[in-house]
Length: 417
Image 1 (tube, rainbow, N blue to C red):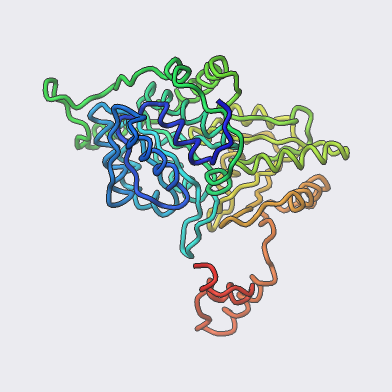
Image 2: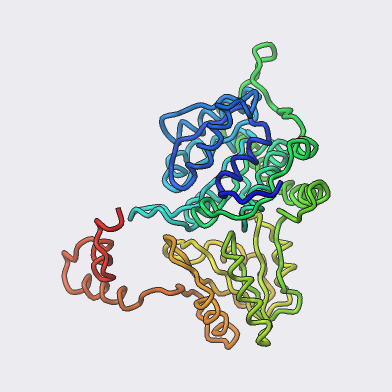
């Protein structure tokens, strides 16, 4: 059914159609509307049987999901930003125990300084935790990926994060096709856990493992991630046959078959990138794009295949590895190792800074002309940065950087609280 609907509510309805049996979450912007919607659906009896559990923290939310999943329930939670960091220990526990929990990440910057707007620092901080990570470009894809995520998680017995750009998608109203319950039931079978806490047949989940077996356990977690590289395209193909939409998969090339420059990115910014690619194509530039939908496990072969004919690669990423530069670009460089292609990292949109078509257009023209550095910061206010560097070099007690920058750009702290 087509609906003009907020992204968070569309995600909530998709989760409800997956028949979760335990939902637990702690509110944190911008994921709150998702679990609020689910709570209302449970209260109205629209999701049965299902227990919605109010908890006291994000750590507790995932801990409850771990217990529920170990007991054989289809479990779901959601978080963002500092909440994901707070549950970090439980994030690793869930994957280490091989529990098929699905969690929505409403992507948001992490502090300090405090920032509630969108970038990818939160989910990328957990990229090596053992969770599969899927990134949505649109709210339609966010709906579809959640349905696929439950089937993927339960087939392999691994947890899955579905990463949705905060505010840009979670709070945007657009037309979304919400499937019927019968369609979802036909695609997603009832949950049959691979491991189960049962007093009649007791087992230990979460046992102490010493050096004699720890490496083998971790290797098998890696093995399941590698299995996912084959299963994800299969599930996406089955989804397309069932629902008539091409959603999910590993990567999505766009006008890249004959492109000299290919732009790589995660999430919603791919929509803006495609618009600029279309403009520049009409103007005669040989450019295309590649959206990475599955970031963990990283689809090295698919990325390499999509990029092997490009003359240059530009990775636009909403994240920054301090002291190195690009996070996504590092994986892209590994994928094309030996092909002798320049990979440019462009850090953009940190803390929700707009990534505009005009800025991208100028960036891609520079790339096409060969004037792009290996590491660049899109729309960085260089004058403000240089002023703060000069202040730090002028005296030891230069003050807090964030406060100084706010004054430099003409913003006071009270205006952004």
